[in-house]
Structure formats: structure tokens, C-alpha cells
Image (cartoon, rainbow, N blue to C red; front, side):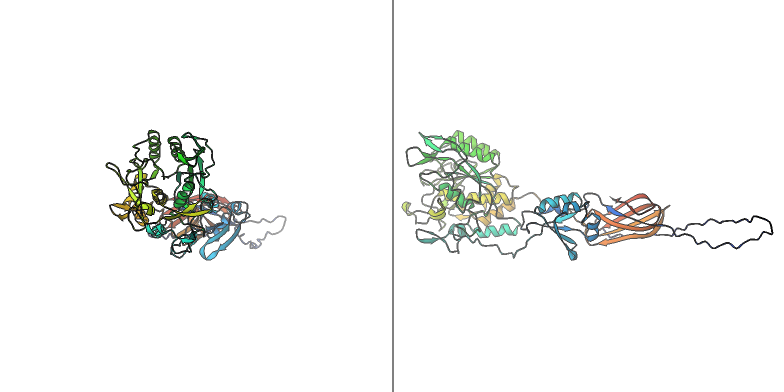
Length: 564
């Protein structure tokens, strides 16, 4: 809309003096004295001041738009307002925003029309200011647009993690093009944080330096295996003591080892919550361990109750078509829109293991560093589906080459291993990234993105993080919300009227940014009764309002305006 200019006419008002008549008394001849000169007294002057109140919704307030997950200076808030507005709203007083800023350190940034405020909770202060019509925002931190490379020793190109006397690296991250996928997330305004993942396994070394900051909870559904039955449940999800001790710790690390912390390994997700769900128990009187129908089903239900968005199940039984109890738990996970990822199995001739053979479970096989399906990886039998492959290494013992991958171990250590378990965990990490970046996608769409975004590995698709992220973005059908336009400038005019005639000089103010719902004004007028009319013109629309006032002394009057 074109800017409007409103010209208001004003006239002066005059007071009329009465005529005094004098009479003589006593005798003698009357004479008419000259009339003394009495000047007309000047009318009393008053100041009428206050604020013009714009309606709620005029501004798109930064307090409700701010992205507090983006990098920003901690403990700082930028309050957008000119000095007159801040003064009118009570800065430095017990009223207005003064009560909100009391005791806080403030610094005017006059050239920007901002006030920098030091506060322990900038988000809460922003919300409180927004309720009073004052815009604010975080003090964002900008960086050079170069994606940071993880400084963890195990990341390819860094010093490496020593296992068996040799420096080892996570070459599988290069194989899935992890850095390229992270860069795409960065470029699209996303982050490298994952949605909540539940890892149903042997437990976790909760004190591992690569895990202790990531695990937010978990549960033990099989403390001890007695005669094939799990006994004991508690909140201690510490690793089992027997074989395969450390398996759960390793899987959690592949999904979400703390990344870019100069310690150990990097993971597919750099941050985000992990649940360590222990479904394996130590065999009483033996040196083995196992999970049961009951412990696995309970672990799935726990993950659903904890609102996990991805469940990783790096376990299975070869030749089993279905387990009704676990199948019912999987149905509950599907109803909760959870992506369930499972290892296909570690014997090449037994078909896809249960539960990976279920239609709503993403079955993942292993591929070695050469892009060839690992010699041990399960191959599907007739009627079965292997959804995709991911790096899982290879073993010379089954005809492959020794090509094991680097992962976490108990006791704050690291080890080399291979299996479809590792492949499943890497896919779970990728699913977690996608679910956090594009939360509007359902579980089926996340599966589709992972598979369709893969790169060819024989007759299968191999996990490829940039392809998966791009495919997920393409599946995002919800249109981006249309931002609420903000007025770029405003012109304010406040004029006093008596009997439709303009009185006195109008108050005018112009600014390049409308940052508050309250704009201060001041009029100097003779004492009297007036109609005050306010006009606010912005590049988006105009607002009008008026109030009647009688002022015999200085008076504060606020003028509400409405959109026209």
C-alpha cells in the first residue's frame, strides 16, 4: 500500500475580556475618567501526553518467532525499541517494562534501536515482553559456512583410536557420506541432532565418556536368566557380564556417541536423547546370555511409552516366522508411528531373522568397505524382503576379508567388530536424524527416504546419508508457514480538536521500524476540553482512534487505535 500523508488544519483560540464600567459618587460635577489598560491574561498551558496503543496482532513479535535452538549468545536478549518507547513503557521505573528489567544489566545500542539485556533466562523474558507488546529476539551467533569436521580421534583424518596397538578409524562414516549428509542438513537450517532412539540390547556402560552425556534413561527387563526365564526388573540398565558383553554399548555408540567432543568416536547423530533398554539377561550358572519373548515385548512397550521415535533391535532368531507376543508389541509401536529397525541376521543361508522379517520392520543387511554384501549377512528367502544394506564390516572366517569396524566397548574402551547389528544401528542413527529434521514425516516416509536415498550395492541399496536427507526433504509435503509481515515503517500524527477545528501544533513522529504496540506522544495546549485524534500509517495498513479529554492541568491520556 502507498504511504499516506494526512495534513491537518489548526487554528488559534482566543479568550474575550469583559468591559468594566465605573460610576462617580458624592457631590460636584461628575467627570469621566480614562479607562485603565488591563491586558488579557494568557491562557493556562497544559501538557497532554501518553501512548498511542496499537491493537494486538499489529506486530509479528520476535518473542514468539525466535528460534532458541539456533546458536545464540547465552544470557542475552535484544529488545527492539526506540528510546521514547522505552521511556514511555517505564524503563527504570517500577511500572511497565521497568519491573521486568529491574536488576538486569542493560546496554543501549542506539544506532540499531535496540537494548541489549543480560538475563539468566532470555526466552522467558522475551515471552513476558511480548505480552506487553514489545519485540525482542536472541542475539544469534553466526559462523563461517563451513561444516565443522568432528574432532573425535576416530573420525577419518584424525589421529585415530588405538585398538590392538594400531590406530583405527571410522571409515564407515566416509562410506555412508556422513559429512555430506550433515552439510545438507546445515544448509537447510536443520541440525545434526537426532530424535529419541531406544536401543533394545544388552544394556550400556553408562559411564563411557562417549555415552554418559547422551543416555537420558532406560530400563532392565531381564536382570538374570533362570531356566530360560527372565528374572528381575529394575532401572539399572548396566551391561550384562557374560557374552556378548558390550554389544549394547557398541550399538548405542554407533547411533549416538557424543560427537565433536574431542573424545573417542563420532556418531551418525551428534546430539539427542538415547534410551538404553536392557532386554538381555545373564544366564544363571553359565557364561551366556539371552533375551526372551517377554523381555523383548516389554522393551518395545517401554520404548513406546517413553515416546521414542526410532527403535533399534540388533537381535533376532533365524527361521522363526513370527512371535505373537512380540508381533503385538510391534503393532503397538507401528500405531505410535515409530520407525523400527532390525538386523537381518548373521548367517547367509537362514533367511531374514525374526523380527527383521516383519513387514513394518526395516530389515538391514551388512556391506563391507568395498561395497560388497558381507559374507555373513543374511540373504532373503522366497517371500522375504531385505530392505537395505549398511556398513557392517566383513570376516575372513566366512570367506570375506578382515574388515571389522571401530566401535565402543565397555570400560571406556574401543574395539573392532562386524555384523548386521552394526549395520542396523547406523540406519537407526540416520532415521533419527531425519525424524528430528523433518518431524512431519511419518514412519513409512522415513523408511522410504532411507531406502530410496541409498546408493547401489549389487541388487540392493546401501545407506547413503545425503541421499536419505534429500529424499526426506522431497517428501515433506507441508508448505512452509507464511511469515507474518512486519511493518517496515510508520508515521504517527496526534492532533487536538475543538468543535471539529484543529487546535495547536500536531505531534508527529516517523520511524523505519514499528517495534512496539505503544508509541509515545506529547501535546502542549491551552487548558480546555478536546478530542484527540491519532493516525498511524504503516506500509501495510492504517490505524485510527480518538478520545475526549478535559485538561485543566498536565494529564496522561492513552489513545487506542484500530485498523481501518
